Amino acid sequence: MTDDAIASGLSKGDAPGLSDEERLAQLGYTQVLARRMSAFSNYAVSFTIISVLSGCLTLYLFGMNTGGPAVITWGWVAVGLMTLFVGLSMAEICSAYPTSAGLYFWAHRLAPPRTAAAWAWFTGWFNVLGQVAVTAGIDFGAASFLGAYLNLQFDFEVTPGRTVLLFAAILILHGLLNTFGVKIVALLNNVSVWWHVVGVAVIVGALTFVPDHHQSTTFVFTKFVNNTGWGSGVYVVLLGLLMAQYTFTGYDASAHMTEETHDASTAGPKGIVRSIWTSWIAGFVLLLGFTYAIQSYDKELGSPTGAPPAQILLDALGATAGKLLLLVVIGAQLFCGMASVTANSRMIYAFSRDGALPFSNVWHTVSPRTRTPVAAVWLAAAGALVLGLPYLINVTAYAAVTSIAVIGLRGGDVDRRHPVIPTLLRLGKGRRSSGGRGIWAGGRS
Image 1 (cartoon, rainbow, N blue to C red):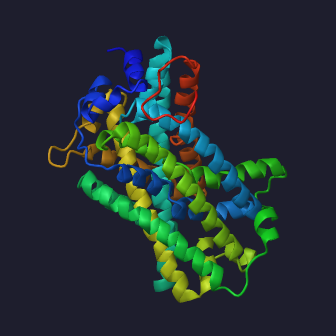
Image 2 (cartoon, helix red, strand yellow):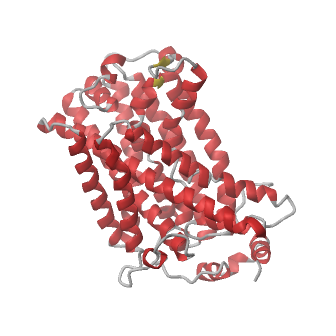
Image 3 (tube, rainbow, N blue to C red):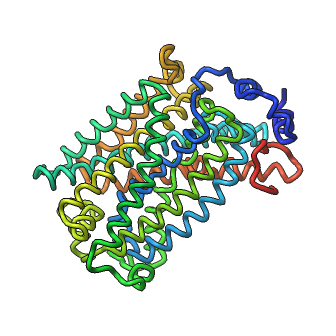
């Protein structure tokens, strides 16, 4: 069956009569991975990787220096809105092509035949590198916050070497969890959704009602800070958007998990869109809570913990409550890193299944016991560890890693979370073409 015939059948509503396995076979693949995930579990993966408690807070220090409260607040609003538009486009394509590592596959199916291989290669490699980098960024952020907690609770001396050791231990933990199979990961991701929702509510509630002092609304929405050394305010604002852009990465995970999800042609698209808008709302509330609760801007910037959000919690709530809520943040970051390894491994698995990675015959193997791509899991973890090692030489390496994540993820989807390439190729087919339309659609194209 031709690509156009497949897409045409999907757009006309014939797909509901097909099983998930039959749809996958139409796209040229045999069902190998275990299809155990529900629609909620699919959504939970993307919501967990976006993780406002991880992305917003690990780069909060960066935001305080590159634009300050004004850019933190308005940047989140603007980036979230644009991400939602991109996610709606991405979801429509996902409905037509519900496969793991969907982005490069979509690019291949939607591009002109003569250039399809090049578009797929370009998109796929951006996506792989971006996913490895975002895994590194998430788990390194978790290691930094864990180090801050250990410093507060046990006088643990935080050094680059010890932070990297914590980082490696977290990656090993996430590799082991993903090795045991998609069932336990799906369960933990479901738990993660409620951990994030309740965690944000508790933290914001405490920051709202406990402190005696709060910043003014003028401060939260208009205070501009430039500690970058650059004279151009516009450039500083663009730098400051990195915090929101980095956080809004990961929603493509719903596409990567479609081969393991029931009713993938609808569950995958809905997972993408729902994860974006729910994270947009939760993140905005969280950022307002932290920014209003800043007691001393300069003190938070120079916090001995190395994590201004941790210092905000301590100064606003006291040592005991601050440390308890810091554990909530660390838990969310650990959930986030686990889900990122899951999505990253599925991208590696599918990309190598088509022979696009060196030693592809190794990376696309699936464990007969757990029916998960175990080799791909450990390649994802190892790649993330390698990206974190330069921190031993220069502490600014973390900002570089998050930048790679944003560029890679937004260059391949573009941004593994922002499917610019597949979306542009879909638009290039024209309004009358059925290519890239599935049984779930966001409206006229």
